[in-house]
Amino acid sequence: MTLSLADIIPFLLLAARWTLLLSAIAFIGGASGALLLLLWRYGAPRTGRRATAIYIQLLQGTPLLLQLFLVFFGLPLLGVEVSPLAAASIALTLYASAFLAEIWRGCVDAIPLGQWDASASLGMNFVTQMRYIILPQSLKIAIPPTVGFLVQLLKSTALASIVGFNELTRSGQIVANATFKPFLIYALVALIYFAMCYPLTLGSRALERRMRITR
Amino acid sequence: MPDTQMPNAQMPDAPMIQMINVNKWYGNFQVLKDISLNVAKGERVVICGPSGSGKSTAIRCINRLEQHQTGQILVEGVELTDQVKNIDHVRREVGMVFQQFNLFPHLTVLDNLTLAPRRVRKQSRADTEAQAMHYLERVKIAEQAHKYPSQLSGGQQQRVAIARALCMEPHILLFDEPTSALDPEMIKEVLDVMVSLAEDHMTMICVTHEMGFAKTVADKVIFMDHGQIIEVAPPAAFFSTPKHERTRLFLSQVLKH
Ligand SMILES: Nc1ncnc2c1ncn2[C@@H]1O[C@H](COP(=O)(O)OP(=O)(O)O)[C@@H](O)[C@H]1O
Ligand SMILES: [Mg+2]
Image (cartoon, rainbow over all chains, first blue to last red; front, side, top):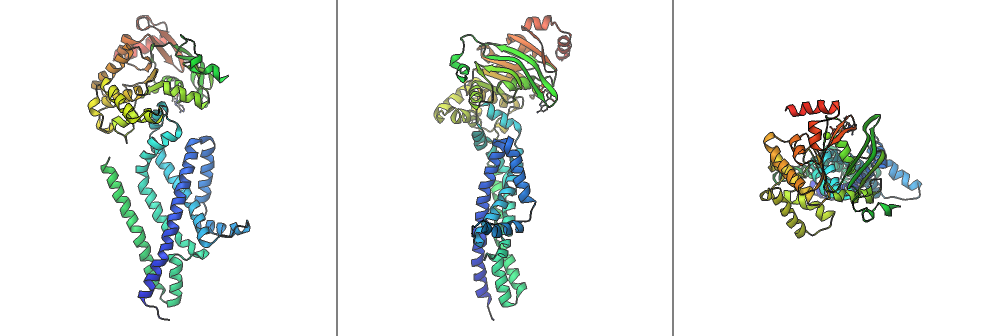
């Protein structure tokens, strides 16, 4: 079988779209979940502190690959058939929500307690405090670690290849098997991952710089 | 039942603040012991006492930044309980100024002042900005309205913090050592603002070691030690003839400086 690079590269780039889609779903889903976990933790500390800590520890303390298996093989046992994309989206969303909640908790805890006191003494309720005082200040510190995690997440989508989702890594495997040139193909795949991750890091630095200038 | 606690049910000359046998513990450590205190409308109260004696905790209970465990606290007749409605009501009527200023660093001075009136009192931006400029003029700092807190000196920041509290048009102001974090040359500009509020008969409770301020404007001075109120007296009597040995010892220490 003779496949030229001119055939292979477009094939891999099309597959990279699925990697991007899965990353976007997991990031947006995970960020929404993390925000809810954060509101629960600080808004109702009596239940929220323990419950969110347990959730975070469970998801951080087990391999993502196993979370993926549990969703992919577990949901059908409950009578819910899931496609590889759906299974990977669910597992990665849960995983991302736990990590982002933990990262953002650190950023919220970095805000001096006096900010809570002052806003409460002015009559602001919890949601108003979060919306106008705490989160805007946390956001600035949260950008670098959040983008760092996003890069991590994008690379972690490679695991979805194992449940048969045709993203970049799995497409690379298919081409490698067909061409018998695994080194060349996997080098190309790695390059495409790098091309997706590097701009994120650059963007994060630019954003940080801009926030520092506008104080 | 809650009806009797709403402000319109209040007696005309009932105290603005009533603390009745208030106790509070941190674990096994009792930080407030049987605190009872009445503050009338327009009354100016100074609380002093050694560090760690529970002064901050006592005034932070009045706007529920801390919770007391036994006893009662009523503000304008509204009892502070777990009821969110009561807490919200009290916090709108009670302003607070902190030792560390606690301005919002990501907002301009003007936005620091208008945020709560807009989001809590739901006033319009134009109204709140006009009001904010009024209070900034009152604390003599109107020209700094568009700066960020970090661009101001400590004394200026504290005056902004006072203006921010005033923008909620509170009936009561609490001050927790408002000059303790300031360089000596800035203390006077903040005290001047506090004196002018006192002269307008703002109901206020000030935790401070500025004995000159206590002598000039206080209606009564309270001495606290180890979580207890040891002595309450008008300033003249408090400074000339303190009844308790501990008060005398404390006064000899602070007045030395
Ligand atoms: N959150 C807390 N947990 C445990 N102890 C505390 C806490 N806050 C204050 N305390 C203790 O309560 C005592 C009174 O504190 P505070 O009211 O700040 O005193 P003051 O304002 O008179 O210096 C101090 O001994 C302090 O260590
Ligand atoms: Mg104190």
